[in-house]
Structure formats: structure tokens, C-alpha cells
Image (cartoon, rainbow, N blue to C red; front, top):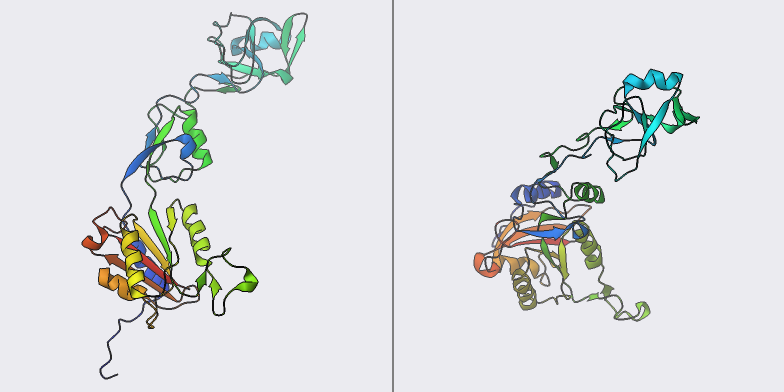
Length: 319
């Protein structure tokens, strides 16, 4: 149309999301936290084992330790018991021609190279008789069988789960270095919005709706490990929208806003971000979101804080 501004073509949402991911640069600031604080955090560096796991050959069952050279004698006439070894104890070397009573997790004594589970043993007249011929290494967990000293146990970039924390504890790791969480400001705009709990549902003013996007997005972001600040509802004015963005930019890496992203007279998010920086992406409506906007603030507006895309970023959604 003559005299009208030329608007950039909108892009498919999936293409826009791919572009967002391609532009993203991981945060690099780190901190040390205890294992109790590390669930869900992203590991900033590889963790290497400083010991073998298990740290010694140990029995995987309750039973009797022996040398397989004496196994046939143990089957025919039985062998006397010369020692008793429980978990946490370290026994003497096994005497030749004898067995040692041993329990799960206990160190296998020197000179013993097999453990016969107690279900396959019978004690008769003070001698232990086995019902099955033992083989070398039977029922023994070898030193370093699970983890070897110097091995990378958990790699950099891993989001730590309860299983990772248990694994790290097993190698004596009390703390880990993790990436600091992404600081996200969540901004909802619109004069029609009312926070749940401020008025009764049957007393909602005409034309008003309860603000719900914030609760949905806050939960999603926290599940991703982000540190979320939900801002007060922003009124539909250019000045208040711009001021809210500037304030949020001073203390956050990313601003996620909902509403106000179209081109109507009451939509102030787009002109606000254009005045503070540059509009880099404008996505086509879809069944999932009506508009998606990604912009970056200028260094002055962002106060040159560490950021997600190398500069302060804002992601605007309209549902």
C-alpha cells in the first residue's frame, strides 16, 4: 500500500526456534556447591575419580572364602574355618587348607580367590563342606571393577540427577563446580490482567482476566534450572513497558515477556525493545503461539552484564 511502512516478513515458528538455538551461547560463570545443593545443576567441568571403586577385592555374597586349589577337598571332607571377616574389617591372609567366613562387602583375604555362597555350604562337625566346585574369581568384586582411579566419572555439561549425586558421593566428592543459573525476568503485560487471589472469581471486573501465563512459565523455567523473578504486571503504556524492561535488564540475563507483541496501539513491547536495542526475529503465528519476538538490548541499555547471546536478550511471547 502506498505510504505504508514495509514490514519484515514473518517466519515459521520452528525456523525461529532453530535460529534462537543457533544464536545461543552458554553461560560461563561458575560456582561451587555441595552435593546437597547440586540436584538439577549443570556441571561446569569433568569430575575425575581419585580412587578405585571398589577400593579392594570384596565378596558379593555371604559365604566362605577359599582357594580354589582346596575346593575339591572342601567338597569331599570339608575344610576348617580359620577366620571370620565382616564388612569394614580387613582380615589376615587365608591359611592354606582352610576357609574364612565372609560377609557381603567384606575384603577378600590374601590367598583366597573364590567365595562360595552360604546356600551352597554345610557346616558338619566344625568343617565347611561345599556342594559345588568353586571357580577362580567366583562371587568376588574386583578392585576398580566399577570405576578406576583417574577415570572421568561425570562429564562437563551434564545436568546432575540424583543418580549422578550418588555416584559422585561414592568417589568421595563433597562439592562440584556448576554453571550459575540463568537469571530470567518474567514480565506479563496488559491492563486487563488481575493476579489470582487479589479478587474473588465472582468479583472480577468487567473486561478483566486472571493472569495465568506467569505461573505456567515460571514453573517451566524453574524445571530447567533457571532463577526466575516474576515482575509485577506491567500496564499498557510505552513508558511503563520500557521502564520495566530497563530495570529487568540491569539484574537478569534474559527477559521473557507475554503479551503486547502485536502491532496494535496498545501493544508496547515491540516498540520498547526497538528503542532499547534491535529487533532480530519476528515469528509467524502458529497453533502454539501467536507471535514470537527476539531482540537484543544495546550495551548501554543492558549495562554490559553477562548475557545469554553475548548481549542482553529478551524473548517475547503472545499466546
